Length: 423
Image 1 (spheres, rainbow, N blue to C red):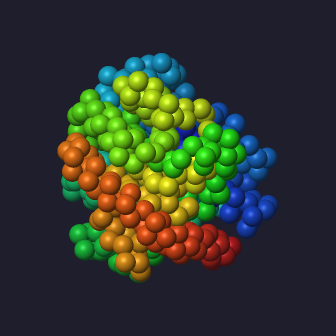
Image 2 (cartoon, rainbow, N blue to C red; image 1 turned 120 degrees about the vertical axis):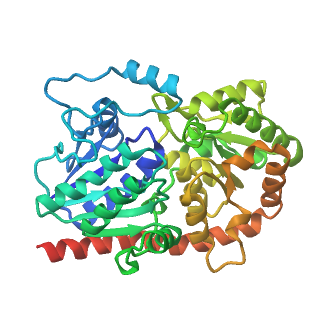
């Protein structure tokens, strides 16, 4: 059996690793004879992070030329050219696709055959990253339909869509997918109410990253409890590129907020650069902030090339997490930490609400829109409320995460059923 995993933008984004690693673990556990091919933007790096004789890694050439497979007559830009492009634009857009009709799905996949295609979770299916990106990640659905192969889109946040073209791209993919699971109810409500999607085709499960086990080795060595309570921060280098907010003002706001945390809460701060991609490297903004703070001994940037599990281990040693990267927030929620996601899309509110469902906690008390961050006084008031009530919020997260882990396993039970039907 050959299982192909697409929708992977590379393990330099630790959120992507947090999704894919448990997916591979579940698939190899349930189907020990299966071969797995991961189609990714960075196959060399990813294979070094998760080597397994049953797993191979194929190149998705989207960044180089806007298509799945690199044309034979094209070498594409170098890594340094991509970095320069990202630096000039603040966020990366792909090159124009070669030999592709506008609006048409790209069916020239880097794999030749499959018994099942899985599109990994996250928020690939929205207008936040542009129509070209949406069309790219929907294309495997059309390939699967053409080749009579089942395809499962698991643990997705879908929407919002900003134009009718994006809605049409999604509608076609939704209609032809064998299985779609959503990681929170906000997406299903949006799809059923705004786009008229059938609710029975959209079961709500949970993000597969809830299943990632933390590795506390680094945290045990470098975040001793004797040094006082820790607050973990995930600050995004690219969030302003996606939202149109001012990059410099964003950095300055974080400097002021950290000063208030240090002075008012008497804590130590662990800054977690959860994404370390060329041109969207959270170590850049994190290091700038540390410098502006005079390299205060109470602030530590964990800039090493740590795994998603090791970063999750750092989170387990923290009393509170404030995260612009959603999977850093999931690391906090899934380990029962008081967690404040700083969001710009449907995913932050939806996932936090899913975890807090059934508790007395209103998820809106925790989720902070990124636009609110720039009013430092107001933003800190919200953070301070979370800090003062952190024990109650942590207890609610710990309880809610148990259900989320069970729901995350449902993704793989549904995949097993899909494979059984296809056999």
